[in-house]
Length: 304
View 1 (cartoon, rainbow, N blue to C red):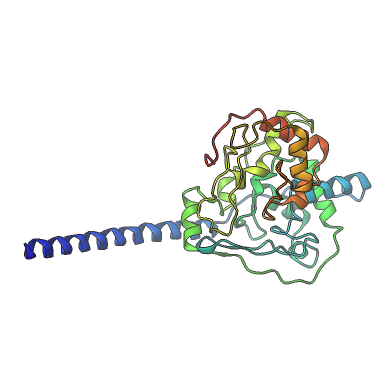
View 2: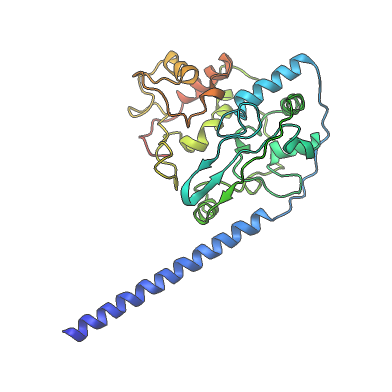
């Protein structure tokens, strides 16, 4: 009996060792693939850009930067675009939106390179951006892209060092498995031309704007824990018309959440939600988002 038990323990130990070795090899392969992808050079030519100083163009650019692009949220580039607060996500990594004023990133980018950055997720050196939600807004037409760049060129320059983005091993593995996207350019097809409708309070226009929500609330908008996120990161809510989501809500309830950050029960949203940006969406954009959210299938909380 002792021999049997001893043999069994040895066998279990050997199996655990084999599994650990296999897991180590798998992680190593995924990390290597991630690193290689980030070092890839993308041959995407920069487009010809014509920036403007016209007041309507600058106003449109400011709105897109502050609201639709959510660039001025604290977790992105900050209210003055001089750099955001670090997002610490444990073993996934720490992510920091850099200084994008004329004394930060913009100092070394041409206008054409900025448009390529925003549209294709490709940096000045031809490599991929990390973590920036380019797919949320790269559907914007050329005139909107140019308006954004025109406005950014007017923002006062700030001498402020940005913290470093550090991607952990878990973050790299999650990215390679499409659970937590970090490697931006790999996911964008530069040959795919999208043609969004003109801004209108319609579900069709809302289907483009809602991409702003999918990074946190999931592809199906039903929320749930963000894969790999530590307990300090709040669990995104369900945005579908399910009983665990927006069932029974009226547009005024939705508007109050976006503008005031208050739920129907009066509870305030977690600061992780970038209300400072969403509160600046105009009525057309908010109505379009609401129309689209009312059209999606109801899913229980956690379906992501």
